[in-house]
Length: 94
Image (cartoon, rainbow, N blue to C red; front, side, top):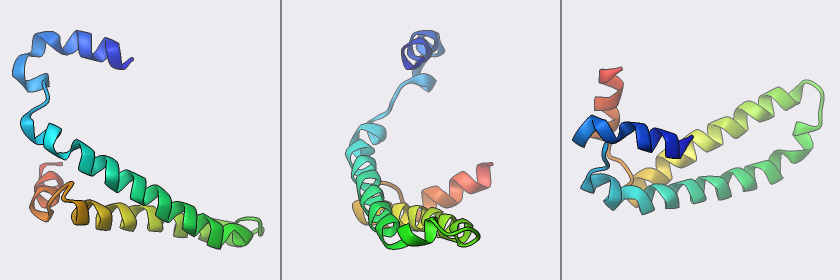
């Protein structure tokens, strides 16, 4: 599907091509994703017993999602994957 999307986007011109900012930040986004995965793994190890309990598993799952969200935001800022002004601008656009 990615190949098909790339092939179909050829005719869209510069609007469908990656810019220099994308290439500069790709490795930072990758590092933030890896760090988020490590944080989620540690949270999963800590919350593992709670995930096997009947009602508490939903609270533990919400906690895992919160760890993922917060850790990606923190690591993304630390590695320079995005800035606060860009996040604010993207929320204003939607």
